[in-house]
Length: 92
Image (cartoon, rainbow, N blue to C red):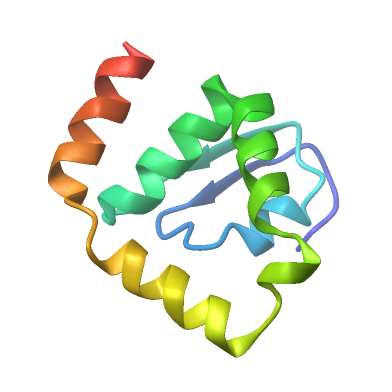
């Protein structure tokens, strides 16, 4: 990425790895995936709450194939349309 006082524009932010490793004074992030945009909205508004939730998950007892598959099964059962509506309501 060039040095200078530029604005970083990312139309498909995805994981945000390029943005997170840039040093520009201004950024415009976008993505069509509503899960990604909702995640970044939550991070912006509720950063500490999100970090605390992650701390509860990223622990040694969860670091096994069995726990991964159990959590993945639980994750795949979530009604994401309802969850997204709840999150959007929380952010408003």
